[in-house]
Amino acid sequence: MKFQDYFDRVAIIHLKDRTDRFGPLVAELRRIGIDITEPRVTIPDAPMPRQANGFPSKGVYGSFLSHLEIVKSAHADKLQTVLILEDDAIFSRRFARERDNIARFLSEHEWDICFFGHSLTEELCAA
Image (cartoon, rainbow, N blue to C red):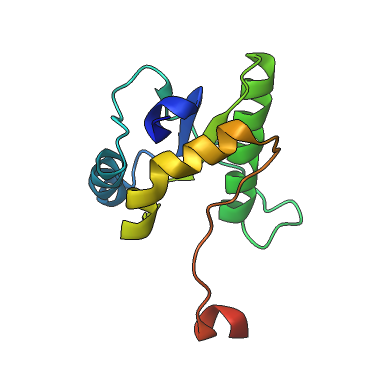
């Protein structure tokens, strides 16, 4: 199974004014076999909340709202698999090599959320 074919939708959280992130994201997605111009790839309009509403910042709240709206939309559209990315996603060489094995594994197992995550560094652990 091909990684790029596994997901019913690829949703990208991106602020349109962050043009500095768009080019590198397109290159990262191309590297793992996803063409950003495919119909199943979406970049929904990002909410711009006026207040943090209990979150650390308006940006964090906006990101939460973006994720929530993507999940609600996928549910309403009765999709089974959705890859949600933020516009600063970077994929390791190992991920790029193993992407089809990851898709095969996911297709053979029942799962709800799969977090591809990141490597922890001392700086992140101290935060």
